[in-house]
Length: 76
Image (tube, rainbow, N blue to C red; front, side, top):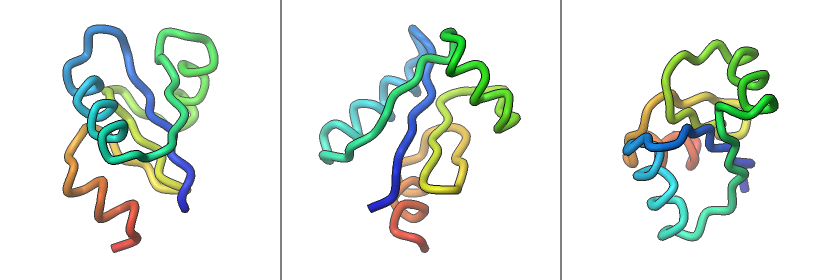
């Protein structure tokens, strides 16, 4: 099972969509708010400028697309 980290910000509809999907499918993940110090630091290291961002194992997915997520999570 790959480790998941979801980076979000308040009032972001795509962030809410990603969170809802992960919850409904039963994925375990750590959620980090981009406004908090830890979230900003991690996103700066990734180089991401838009949200949501999903860290799937060692891979980075910027934006939200359920099909892309499933493909990346399954290693395809």
